[in-house]
Image (cartoon, rainbow, N blue to C red; front, side):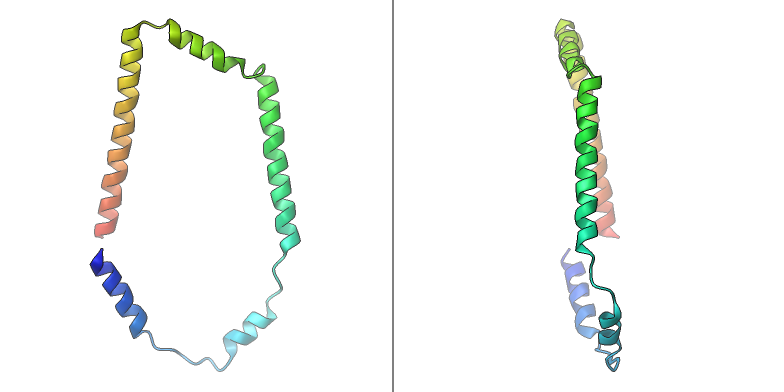
Length: 110
């Protein structure tokens, strides 16, 4: 980790400034201004669609009744089955976490 910070600092300090005789400023001045209104319209459309999809899903699913039905089915299972399901899901989550940690540590080494 310290080596990466050191290398980044060295590369940043070693990069000389190249004078472009105002080219960058001219290009930035010719760019069109940012379009704020279109961004707002996109956000409204996205939020409206998400709200409509949520309401439609709630209505189609009979008011979320499937959740209570699933909980009733889980409550009717024998205790051993509940324990096995909890253990299996815990093992899957632990394996996923270990895989992510190993992947991340390998990525930071390279």
